[in-house]
Image (cartoon, rainbow, N blue to C red; front, side, top):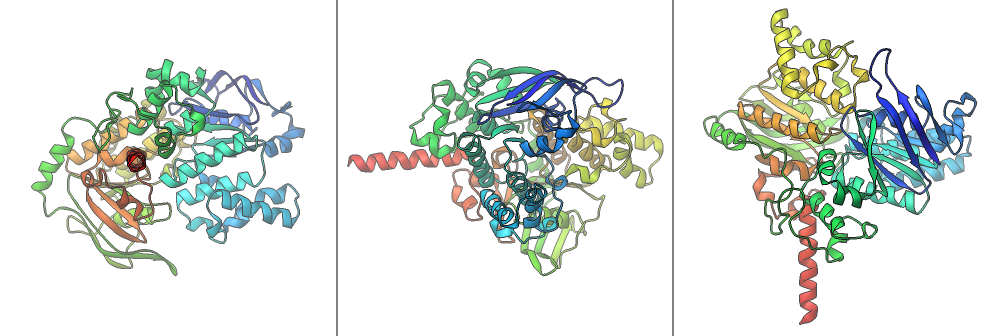
Length: 563
C-alpha cells in the first residue's frame, strides 16, 4: 500500500505550506486521479510519494517502508516510478533504447533481461521504431513516451504519472489511457494519475481533488459527475465530449465498459443535454460545454481587421528544414492574415515545434521563405513561447525574467517596470510570485511567467507551442481569452497544439501537418464533420466527431440488419 499520512511540506522558511495535512492511500491495482488547480500541490505530492522529497510533518510509506529511511531509499525508488511533467528532466542517455535501459541496468539485471524489458517497454508506448533515435532529436511527445518507457522497464509496483499525456497527440493519449488501465487492472500496479484531462479522471477508480495544499474532496468519478457538478467544471476541462461522458455516468453507464467514443456508441449511450451547459447535439452542432474561447466579439473583430490588412500577416512559401541529413519539413506553405488565429496540428514528430522555430526566426529555412508583413522574422519581433516554459526562465526571480526582454530593448527602467506589471496582469500571473525563483513555480505558473516575458516585449506576432499544456481550467480559459485579445489588437497568433477538442472551435484557421508538409489548411469551420481530414495526416479526429461517426455507423448497421 502506498500511503501519505497527514503530510505537510513547504518550500523555504516562513512560506505557507504547499501541502497541509494531506492524506492519500493507493492500493495495488487501483487507479487514482489527482486533480486540482495549478499550484495546489499535486507535483509536490508526487515527489513525496517516491521519496524525491520528504514531508516536514507526517509520513509517507511504501508497502510499510518509510520514505525517510535512508537505508531503504533504493527500495522506495524501485517500488515507485514517477513520470514527471517535463520529460527532458528524466532523459539521461543520448539514444532512446539506452535511456530506457538505464534503470534496469542499475537494478543489476543481466543484459538479456535488460534487452527484453527495453523492447517490451518501448513497444508498450509505441516507440519501438525509434529505439535507436537520438533523444534530443525527438519531439516533446516522443520524449514523454521514452521517459514513460524508462519507468515501465523497471517494473514498479506503484506508478505516479504527473501530466504524462500533456504533450501527446490524441491517438497517443488514447493508447496511454488504455495502457494505464491495463497496468492497474491487469498487472496490479497502483497508479496515481495527476491530470487536467477529464477522460483520464473519469476513467479512474477514484478521484482526489487538491485545493491550496489541502485534500478538498475524494470519491468515485460517478460521484463527481453526479453529486459535484460544480466541482467537476471547476477542476476539469469539460469539452463537449467530456460533458457527454459525465452525463452518461450520471445516467448509470458503467465506466468499466470504457469511455472512448466507440465504446460509448457500442453501448447505445444516448443522452440529453450534456450537463455542462448546452446540448452535445450530433450533426456538427456547436453545442456542449461553454468554452473559454466563447468570449465577446473578438473573432468578428479580428475578421474585420483582417479585411483591412490583406497584405499583412504571415506568409510561408516552400519552406524546408532538415536536422543534418534528417528532413523534417518540406515545401511548407501557410497564410495567416493579421488579426487572426491559426491552429497548427499534427502527430508527435510531425514538425510542429520546428515550424514554430522557423516562424519565430530562431531557425532559418533551408529553402523557401517565411515572412511577417513582408519582412523576415526576427527574435523579439515575433514572440514565441516554447513547449517547455523552463527553457525561457533563467534569472534569479520571476520579476527579473519578465523584465529581461524589455530591458534588452534599451527601455528605461520606469518603462520596463510598467511593462512587467502590465504583462503579468495580462497573463494572469499572481504578483506574489514575482520575487520567487522560477524553479519553485508549478508547471502552469511557469508557463504564465514565460508568456509574460514575451508579452512584455510587445511583439507584432505570436507563436505559441503547446501553450495550455499543464494549465488548469482557469488557466486555459485565461489563455484563450489572451489569444483572442492579442488577435483583436491586430497580431497574427499561431498556436501549435495536440489538443484538437480544445482549439479547433477557438481559432479562425487550421493547418494540418503530415509528412513534413501542410496537408490541409483552411477555415476552422470547414473541419466540422470532416474527420477524414484529420485521419489523412495520421491524427485522430476530436472525440466528439468520433462519437457521432460511431453512432451513425451503428445506426446504419442496425438499419441494414432490419432490411
